[in-house]
Length: 346
Ligand SMILES: Cc1cc2nc3c(=O)[nH]c(=O)nc-3n(C[C@H](O)[C@H](O)[C@H](O)COP(=O)(O)OP(=O)(O)OC[C@H]3O[C@@H](n4cnc5c(N)ncnc54)[C@H](O)[C@@H]3O)c2cc1C
Image (cartoon, rainbow, N blue to C red; front, side, top):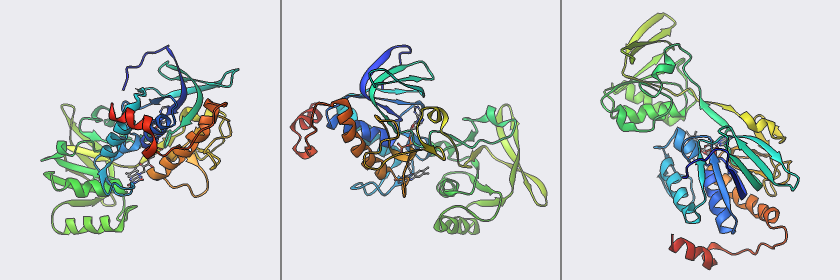
């Protein structure tokens, strides 16, 4: 990662907007095809949803990697594109896109960086995604201390009394994992049915029956604090309210997505996603491509491997925009001597 220098114009072949798994793999493809790119991401580190939402969860459907955690996948993608040395500017949210007289695009970030590129590859995932926060007055001050919207480090909950609020896969997965190390674990959900895998729900009910954790039906009504730390929560249910002592509250209510500035870039969008033509994942604006979860076409699946494929095809078309006078000769990486040399010496 590089330091960000506000107000400096950075010129490159391709600006990749979003350094989630798909943006990172796209950077590798840019290198393989002999082009240059710069990556930017609004977050303070690369990895997108993998790093932000489920770093310690295992992923099983990456080809030839039977299992790896989401963070391990990101680390491997960073390692794969490292030989090319492309800069990754984190903490930079693309805000404005303007096409210049020569057809190139000028992108300005909220933080003041300016980029000039022949091609834009938008790999912005869910756009600006943020966890749905607890709407109680004390919540903001506790965030990151005893109120959490993701589990980044399981070990910090060892020996703690924790409440996990939510009824989706993340809430169920974390309650099952953390009950093994926490002093006491409670799942709080507003009703007794879930939007989660049946197997996880069955495992949770078995753990409750075995006395390994509690399940409470009710709504979070208040946060109790002492000296700026959480000491418990008040739960509202059909018979009234009761308080539940705890050290940490993990609220997993899901994400609120917001296409944010993308909506002003003159792109065809539907339900916050960018409509693309599947021949090359190009948008309605020539030279602007969209890949990964942000892209929309019939039957698009929110899978990492789909984004990898889209990036590989989009960049082959992008090559023609960057080098209109050259012909791209297809060479497998296994036969690419320049690539082998670069990787061996990195
Ligand atoms: C709990 C969970 C489990 C999952 N498990 C699996 C699984 O097992 N297998 C699988 O294939 N998929 C899984 N997924 C889905 C997978 O994580 C996504 O499909 C994948 O992350 C999409 O990658 P992406 O790079 O397109 O977008 P993202 O990972 O969303 O990354 C997009 C990046 O773009 C950045 N960005 C957005 N707007 C801007 C802007 N204006 N300027 C700069 N940066 C911007 C964001 O900050 C973000 O870092 C799971 C998802 C979740 C939530």
